[in-house]
Image (cartoon, rainbow over all chains, first blue to last red; front, side, top):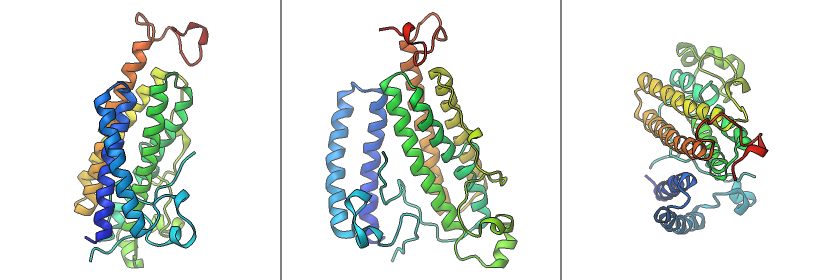
Amino acid sequence: MTRKQRMLRELSAAQFAKWELHLYLDTHPSDMRAAALFAEYEKKCEAMRAAYEEEFGPLTAPTGEGAEWLKNPWPWDIERCD
Amino acid sequence: MFTYEKKLQYPINIKKPDPKAAMIIISQYGGPDGELSASMNYLSQRYGMPYPELKGLLTDIGTEELGHFEMIGTMVYQLTRNLTPEQIKQAGFDTYFVDHTAGIYPQAASGAPWTASYIQSKGDVIADLHNDLAAEQKARTTYDNILRLVDDPDIIDPIRFLREREIVHYQRFGEGLRLATDKLYSKNFYAFNPSFDKCAVKK
C-alpha cells in the first residue's frame, strides 16, 4: 500500500465512524454522548483531510481548482499498490 | 445542494477483470433494488416527511446511497477493463457490449433498464417508511445473492461492506418509524396523514 492509499484509507475510516454517528444522531438527537463523540471525530477528520489535501491535492470540488482538481486518479481508477 | 467528494466511501481495487461478475453486480447499479433506486426513493420521499428527524434521515441515507451507486459503478467499470472480443463473447458480455461497449448503464442483470417504477413516493409517512424498510432488506438479499455467485476477494470485500450498510439503514429506518408512530394518534396510526391533514396534527 502506498502512503497515499494508507492516508486515504485512514481518513475514510474516521469519516465512516463520523457518518455512523451522524445517522445515529438523526434518530437519537438528544444523545449527548454520541454528539460528543461525533464532535471528536469531526475534529479528527478535519485534521486528516487537511494533511491529505496538503500532500495529494483537493478532495472536494469547492476547494479544488483547475489542474489540481482534474489530476488523475479519479475514484473509479485502479491505483497501483507498489 | 450537493458537494462532490473525490473519493469512494470504501476502497475498491479489483485486479482481475470479470465481465460475468460485472453483469450480475450491475443489478445493484440500475436494478429494482439497486443503489440508484434506493437513493431516488429516499431523496424523493423526504419532501413528504412531517418530522425533522425523518427529513434528516431520508436526506442522509439517500445521499449515502449515491456514494454506493458510485461504488457499484466503480466495480462494474473495473471488472470490464481491457477485454478482448474473445473474452467478451466467452463471458456472455456481448449482449451488453453491443449497446454500451464498456460504458456504465443503469440496468438490471436481466438487461431491463432502470425505471422510476422501481421507486415509491406515497406522501404518507407510514407507507413510505415501510417501503424503505423493505427496500433495505431487498437490497440486503440481492447482496447475499451476489456473494453466493462470486469468489474474488477483491469483489467480496466491498460487497460485504455494502451489505452491512443495508442492515444499518434498516435499523435507522425502524427507529424512524417508531419516532413517527409515537407522534401519531395512538389508537389509530392511520387516522390522519400529518403531512397532508394539517388541521389534525397534534401540537
